[in-house]
Length: 322
Image (cartoon, rainbow, N blue to C red):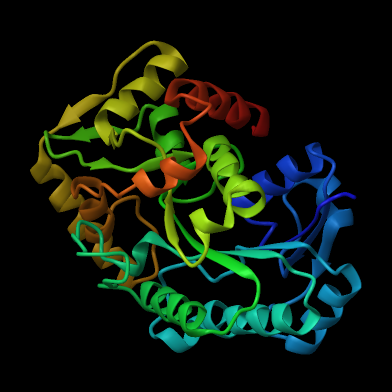
């Protein structure tokens, strides 16, 4: 029998790519999301349901009776003022847990949390050590605690996607590619950070393996960062993208220019005017954030795609989108 997979948040970046993969493998798929799919062919799999609406959500899940659930749906922006504004991440997750216990067909659930359960650049002592510095991060901490303390009868694991990029992505990583392509990216002196990133096709393989084929003993109740080895220096990667795009490298600018631009961006933000640089973005550009992937690789193995392969495919996708 075909595997039946319910994806919440399947209209988002990761969800779009995951559903594409499941369709290609001839699985039965349903996408629960309040946003319409990015790909027109995915509309037939889409159910316009808010995961906070327990009654409607329960009806849709009962109609489908999935074997597996990939829970990606969340509010992911950083604009909220308090954790209550992110109840999609907490109440929505609790609803998924309650429904799984009620319908009893679900074998395994994979919950998507966030690397922002810890502040960028922090060094947590363990996966249960939290230090969020945004309301979004706080909501994901609470989400993980809801899952860990629940009495979920199905097998489960938590994933924390790192900085994932590739076709169908959005801000901020799409902006990074666009700036490089347009010749607007400049190196911040010698202060560029090194981070753990993940090319989406590798991420899809990692997620589907954890959800569908990994042994229970290897994943049950565990937390996995989703990403690629080795980490990337953002300046080196920007030059790789530029070389693949037009055979040139990016220019370097003194770091103090970035600091001034960030201050201008902070002031414009107060007036609700968008600007490509703020202090928050500058911190992200210059703070190393290398995350542990050994547990993931021990379960799923090495990547199928190199960064160069991913960059070429992403550049091709961007040109086709235009």
